[in-house]
Image (cartoon, rainbow, N blue to C red):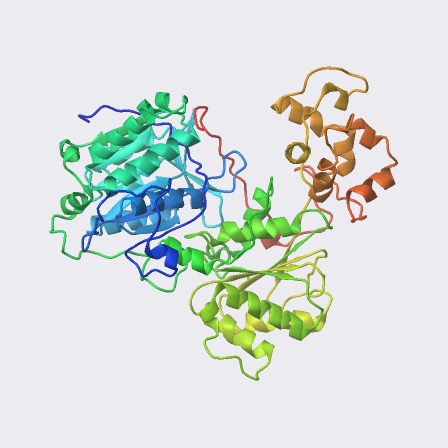
Length: 607
C-alpha cells in the first residue's frame, strides 16, 4: 500500500433516523423534489449525474441479537449515507441488506460477473485468543455468525478474485485485519479502522468521505479530505481520531473517481450496461433487486420502538427460530407469546417487528403490526386487521369499498400480500379476546388456510395449545428479567443518582457512579427483589425515585401489598426467574426447545 495507513475511530453504531431521498427515482413527496441542505445554507455543488450503468452502493449490515454486542443503528447509518450523497447532488443508488454469508457470497459473485458494486459493510469485528480476528455476521433468525479470517478468505475466493470489486468500506472498530483479507483477495481500494473509534468521529468521517466521493473527488482525495475535517473539528476529542482511518489503495487511487471505479472494475465504458442489481433478502419472490431505503420506509408501518428496552435477545431469537425455513423445512406459521401483565409482551412484540422487518432479514419490510383494543366480535377483529394491513400496504385492495364483509376483504388483502412475499402479522391482543373465543380464532385459522406463507404471532396473557386450523401454535412464555437486567432498567428510569443511604439506613456519602459494581449491588437490593424482574413494576417504581425521596429503603418500609398496588395495576403474583439449569414444569415439544446459544466475545479493543 503506497499510501499512509491512518485508522479512524469508526464506530459500529450510528445515530439518526432512516431516510433516503434518491434523486434518481421519482419523488413521492414535495419535500423530496428539492431537498434543503443541512445547516440552512445553500451548497454550491453542481449536480453530479450518475452515469448510465454506474456503480450501486450496497450496504450490508449485521447487528445480531447478542447481549455481548452493542446494537448498530442501521437506520441512522443509512440516513448518513443518503444525506451525504444527496448533499453532493449525487444520484448513485443505495441498496441495503443483512450481512449473512449467503448475501455476501451473492454480492461477490455478482461483482465478479461484472455488476457495478461498491460495498459498505457495517458490522462488528472481534478477536479471540484461539481463532484470531473475525467479522460478525448474522444467521437467518438474528443470531451471531462469526467468520474468522481464514473462513472469510475462503468465502472471498483467494488471490485476485475481487479485482472487479473497486471499493470496500468496512465500518467497524478494529477492522484492519479484516480489511487485509479483502486486499489479499484483490480488492483495489479498502477503507477500515485501526483500533477503537468514537461515534462522533465515525459519523463525521463517513459523511465527509461519501460527500467528497459523490462530488467527483477521487477515492484517495475523499479519504484525505475526511481525515482533514476531523483534524480541524471543534470537538477536542475528534482530531486525535483522524489517524485511525486506514486506506489500502493502489497507485491509481488518486485518479479513481466514482465513474472511474466502474470503468476500472468492469473494463467497459461508463455508458454500458453490465449486470444488474439483485435481491439480498432471504425469501423474495422477485429478482428485481434489493429493497431501496424509500421502499423500505413505505412498506414498514410499525409503532415506535420501546424506550429503554433491555434483554429479551434470546426470546426474540427463539421466536424467529420457529419461522426459519431452513430449520423445519417449511417453518412454523403460528406462535403465541404469553406472560402476566407488565412482563413486557407488547415491548417484545414491537422490538421483534422492527428487527424482523429490517431489509434482508427473515420478514424483510413485510411485517404488519396490529394492536387490538376493539370489542370482541368477529367483524371488529376483521376490520381491525384489515385496517392495519392497508395502512402498511395500501395497494392490497385496489378496488373501492363494496358491500362485501370485512372478512372477505381481509382474505383478499392477505392473499394479495402473500403472493408478493412472506409476511408476518403481529397481533397484540391487549383485551384477550382472540384466544378466549372459538369464533375469533377461526378468523386467524382462515387466514392461514387461504394463504401459503403468511405467519402470525399473537401476544396474549394466556398460553394456547390448540392448533389454528391445521397449524400448530408454538408457545413462548416470557420469564422475568434477571437481577442485573432489572437493576440496569431501574437505573435508566429513576430521576436522581443513587447514594450510600439508598443501601444502608443513615449512611452518608457522595452519589454513586453508574458502574458495574453499583449494578451488581442494586440487583440484590430488597426493593428490586420485591419487584421480581417485572419490567412494568420496575418502570412504575423508578418514576417514584425523585430528588425528594430520602432513600430507596423508604419504599421497602411500606406494607408489601400496598407497595405492589401503588406500583402497578397488575396484582398478579410475579413470575420467578428460572436459572439456566432448571427444567420447566411443562415438557416442551421439540420445536419449542430454544436454539443453542453461541456467545460472542468482542475483542478488548472493540467499541
